[in-house]
Amino acid sequence: MSGLSCILSGDHGPRLIGQGMESIIHKQPSDAPTASERAAKQGEASGGRRRLSQARAEATRSRILHCARQVFAAHGFAAANVRDIARAAGTTHSMITYHFGSKDELWREAVRDMFALLQRQVIDPVEAEAELDFEQRFRKLVHLYTRYSAEHPEHARITVSETIAGGERLEWMVREFVSANQAATTGNLTQLLDRGLVPDMPLPSLLYAMVGMIQLPFMLQKEAQLAMGYDFMTDEAVEAHAEAVVRLLTGSVHGPATRKSPS
Image (cartoon, rainbow, N blue to C red; front, top):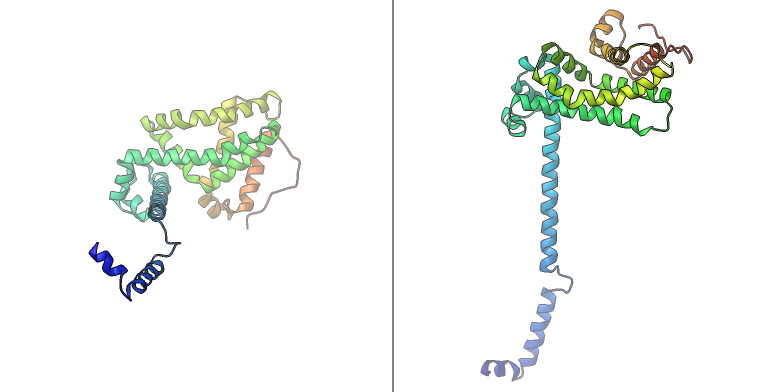
């Protein structure tokens, strides 16, 4: 009480109290963030760093899978070297081991990612066009699949490599992806056969004739360029090839000519 009396009494008491209060007001403005607001901002910053880290990890993973497909397609599973994949992806062997474990798991993840890409770029867009008639859907399927095959020739090369080798990896790939994808496609092809819109033939022959005609030029595009001076990888050539497949399979001779002499 005596201390309080000393502050409240005397000529300087009221002035000291007023100055102290004014100082406090200036040092602690009313709009200063509260503890909860500061915690919220810290949480947002932490969440932003976490999302950035996750995005970088996903980008690294995607790059590894892309490079893995290129190496597996070029050399086959047995001859493919994980260190070569790491160098191509700009990462380390230990990082690949961290993300995928074994070479076999890396191959499976690369193939799983490959078929997910096929699903997004070809199968889903065709199935979304339910209002199209069968012939229009077939044309859309051929054009989308031709574009996919041109952009990702490694898909066909991996499939051929595993088919030649045979064994558990091929069985896994067919069981997990190929059978379902073929089922999504053969329904439309059956309708075309039943309506006489394509030449009569066994359904597997139609399916594999279509797949082979679409894929092969992009697998052999280097040979075609050397032997015929023709580049199948240009946008114009890709679209022309898709239309050629449609015409060959449907017997259509309508529409403008798309033939172009090798330059």
